[in-house]
Every structure is written in structure tokens, then in C-alpha cells.
Length: 154
Image 1 (cartoon, rainbow, N blue to C red):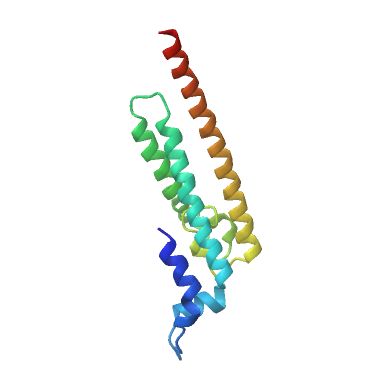
Image 2: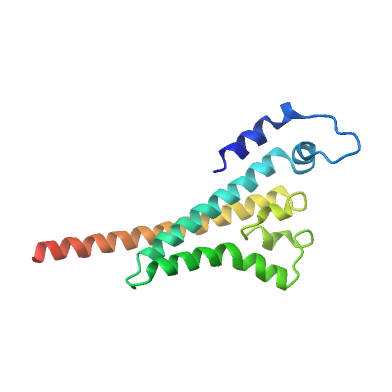
């Protein structure tokens, strides 16, 4: 999903045009935000998609009859609850970019957060993803062992 955006970020200096008085999104992305920070934001988005996929898989491993609803609800909560809560609490992404970096809309802080802050958020999200994948791996192993034992017994 993010490959076209990554290609655009990489080749955008070749697309640069003189804009004069009007706002130029390409100039803004390259000069104000920076290409490296834009790539970090894309990385945040990719990691968020992977976290959502992992949470969906964990919820689908439940033994309830409505596990698909739990999966949909969990992913929807991850995506929509933080921005809604920040909006209700009137947390401005320009004044407090740190919390917005952990939501599904980290690009709201583009140009207002430092590169080390974005890098820290990305590393933290990768840590969460590693923990969730480890948990999912343990769940898959335990299900596989119990099914193997059932086959051996019968």
C-alpha cells in the first residue's frame, strides 16, 4: 500500500517546481519536513498496519463463537479510538506531537515533531509489534501442540 508513496518521496526532488506565492506540497515535504522524516512517517504507518494485522490474528485465535466481531472491533478501536479521544480532549497535534505519533494519524504532526522523536515512536511501535508477534507465535504453537496430541490420542 505504501510503495507508491515511498517512490514519490524518493523521486520528488526531480518533480520540484517553482511555486512562487502559492503553497507547494512537494517543496513542503522535502524542505520543511525532510525526506528522511517522511520515510519515518511511512514506516510508522506500515508498522501500524502490521500491528493491526497481528491483533486481528490474535483475536481470530480466540475460542469464542464471535471471534470475527472481536477482531473487527479491536482493529477499529486501534485505528479510531485514539484520534477520537485526542479530539475530545482537545490535544493539538502541533503542540503535543508525541501522543499523536502513536495514533493512526501520525502525519498530523508532520513538520511539528523532531526526527529523533519520530524515530523513537517508530522503534517503540516496532517493539510493540515484536511483543504481539511473539505472543501470536506462542498461541499458534500451543494450538498446534494440542491438535497434535488429539490426533495421537485418537
